[in-house]
Length: 252
Image 1 (cartoon, helix red, strand yellow):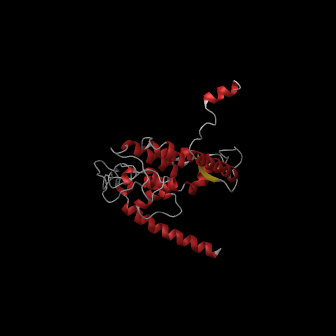
Image 2 (cartoon, one colour):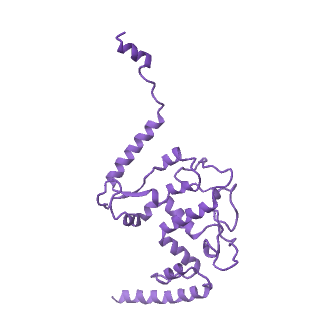
Image 3 (cartoon, helix red, strand yellow):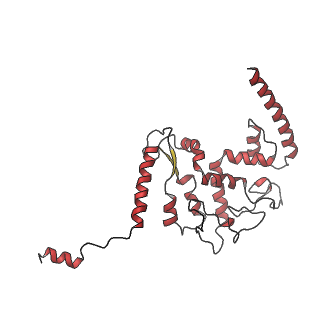
């Protein structure tokens, strides 16, 4: 009991110091949702930039939607096409503005291509504010990129939005449930490669994710493996030609 009281006192003193530092660095214009989030945390962030990072880390689905909306505003650069160079994987979301050929330089996000403002925010916090040339990521795009690469980290959140029901069987989700892409990423690479960017990003977003029980996931993976194996094999020539079938029917 005494130990818990000491820890509580230490945290209270720590938050008082953090709040003083946060208040001193806080600009006149700051996103209200981020401010409310920062002041409601058990650990008060010490800087506005950390408050923005904490906000988007706590709202990955919101970050996913915003990052794709910002990418839609930019569109794909002229001459870009989705390809996987040596050492790259089709499982990594396509991001043309990460390529040195198409980057828009400092002050622009390397994921969506839109201007980045102070604290990694996606809009100007004050009238006439210029993009910040010190960063190349939006706070939302950082959270979205991590979500796209490792959606399993958000399994608890995805379970909740599915009402804890398996997306394949409709039954209750068990402890061994796993995150799965509805349209497998290998099929995205094979069949949707020419889809316009950033519509491609939707295949990594929440709309293409589902939580399924392990046994259902195993069956789905087996079916996908069979599909991949069959698609690699060249089509077999017909055993009989049309002319040969006619002769067989005539008894010749």
